[in-house]
Image (cartoon, rainbow, N blue to C red):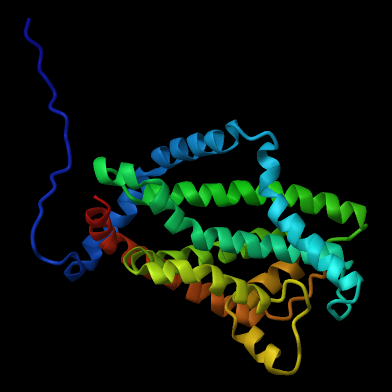
Length: 288
């Protein structure tokens, strides 16, 4: 008896010299299809990376909390010894600066995640065809994993200093997500430039260091002076301050700016994804 053989249906790919930007609806449909299709691969890569990252480490996942812990300890020491003068904060200073440092470090991890994705996946990109959104999702998962570990440290610190939290803490994850998406969107915009111009990549450490001091992490938002203007122009400020206030006081001083920045972040993320999507073939050709 001869049975019928079902032919496996595979999507047909047609390569043409015509720019895909001329067909935006089709392009965005392909982007979301690839994003959906890359979930399983991203999960496998994330599991592999986390196991590999801590397999030969004696201190394990504690390395995720050491950088923000040392930064917060240094700033607290400088404040207690009078090296820097900080106005009174709503919660004990060590808890205040640790919360700000964790939020900043999470933003920084998200900002660097697209470039880290490219650097760690160079052999894979050059040899295997797969949805390139998978490596971004992998790094995004790594950012969330590290954040979850830091939150445990923050809870311990809040308990030690008897810091009470507001009921608005239930909305804090939304502010955390917007802060992470802002970092990812900026990182996606920078990926082509950082890979084509090495000076940009090398200057990022200096830029982020200056950015750190212009963000209200170790001090409350200033109300006057040049620093006040620079802090208000900082796109991270309303997101970070709102996340802090949702956890601690529940009184949102920058809600309007937060909502505006949330909209800008979502638009910037979609456009940054588009830039990444269109530039990745050229980056792979350069890597190969």
